[in-house]
Image (tube, rainbow, N blue to C red):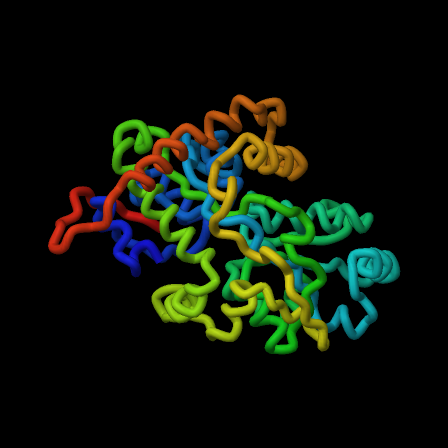
Length: 338
């Protein structure tokens, strides 16, 4: 929306948007300098900084782009077999332990989706490492895989849960707003050297995105956001599917519809600050994931080094002080963004 609304130009930036194939590609292109900045899953700046499951480079975030926005969807087959929630899922797994292992999809092992799914399973008494299989699947491929029976459930952002419900492939068992109120979802990720060498441009980028976040969070703007996201070059999904996650009027499947307040949050008091508590949430779940060879590395000091509230504060002041863009004003700086 920052691109569509001319907000990058307002802050003196010429931004080229690149649509990437998956989160691993985003991470590698940030690390090797092919992208200046990226919309990233919450654990990625930490994973890149520590070299978890891939290449290593010091990375930071000066902006949380959103809170919540995900849901856990289970297959319609499980519904037909009597599963309605985590407790009944645990019972089903115990009853069929010798026959099959259920497979669940997530978008990344270092994303909030994986963290939430593991926590939901654990709360139900299911061992995510021993009793089920968790695999990485690109979000647009989850509906087809759920319908085909390759997945028995998944944790993914909208609109893909709504797509699965509308097609009859599955039902929503829980939303992330209900499971972990206030949890960070996506962040703006850059290399540390970029943040230091191009501090003014980085802060201008955050300022533009802050204004876009405010626009997206305003109910009066939701139809414009939906129409934009529906386009082929963006999410390329039906407006009806996109509307559920943005309005909060959520269809859980099988005749259950209810409003989920703050299903997805883009702006608001303390929503966008990469604060210590948001960093702590990500670090706690990375520790529980078992992906980190030395859990002692996941310290509050690392949280403060990666989640940069100081950068956010400077960008917020710039956002407040920047006047409207003048006619025919040419952007000063070119950036490449995923």
